[in-house]
Image (cartoon, rainbow, N blue to C red; front, side, top):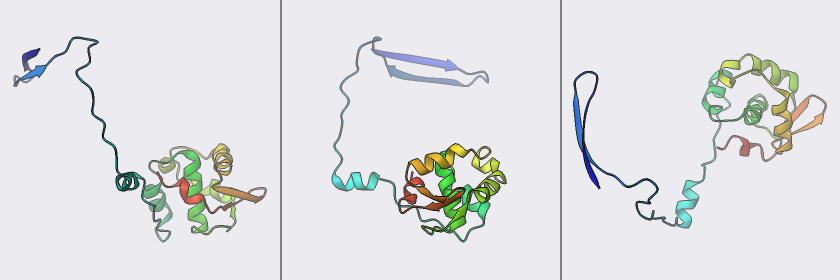
Length: 144
């Protein structure tokens, strides 16, 4: 069924047009699904992130931490402090100190849950209490 609609807004402007209406609960027709080729599937995957460790700390975090969860932000900050080097030791109290200087960018104060989750996901490891190192798979944390 087609309907002709005329609407006047608060400022007196008039809008009109036609629409197709369907009864409630009745499908309008089957949706078509297209299969993606292998190339299209590969293109759809996230491209590897190239991090620029020469940027100032706040600019680095602002650029790369936007869409990341807390544990992923933790990995990003550890990566910044280690300059991306797998196995380089980073003190947890250093991460905590840097994080809490950027609470607005990182959307809250540091939470120890972040480091535990990052370790559970295999992005970081601990050699001894309070010392974190990046693992070979740490880049998975920042690829969204």
